[in-house]
Image 1: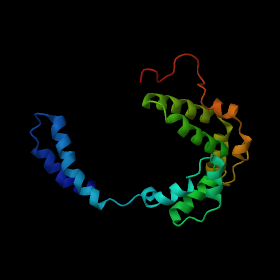
Image 2 (image 1 turned 135 degrees about the vertical axis):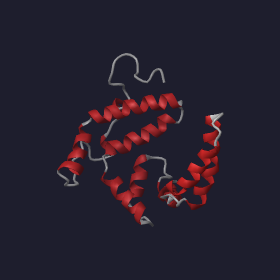
Image 3 (image 1 turned 180 degrees about the vertical axis):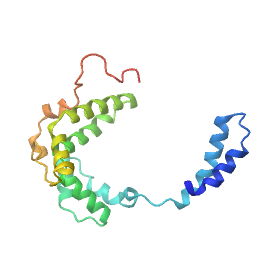
Amino acid sequence: MHEYKDELLADLAQCKWMDPHCDVQNTINNLSGFSEDEAPISNIRENYDEINDLLAHCELQEKINNLKNTEPKSKWLAFAQKGFLKGCPITYKLVDEQIKRAKHLSLKQVFQMELIVSTRCAMNPDLQEGIRALLIEKDGKPIWSVDSINAIDAQQTNQFFTPPWGGQHPLERL
């Protein structure tokens, strides 16, 4: 948007500032049309159909197998596939579970769930292992606590959704 800096400044200079919110909103509306036609298509949008085909299966293991056994059509998706397949199996399970649980939650409840899960992930030794393998020793070969999603039971998964603190949730007043 910075290529439209002159137009933005001219629009703002024209404002009478009697209703600042309205003036700024009108300026944003005037400029928003500039970028729509010129915006590049995102990688996700460009690969959307292929991503949906790969993840169309209901069960997580089927989705993982599909990702392992496919040859992506684009370099971007091949890069994403490679990163995914090196990832921690617990992460696969957690994301799958988060999607299932979040479907029927309010936005407040989703934020609360996200805080619990992220706190639990930070407490999990796999985070340290990923940091070691990718950022410290840079061997790119993390040794995860489990080899596959089949080694993760419901109790382990549920632990990530259990608040690590006692009492009221920190985001209760959200």
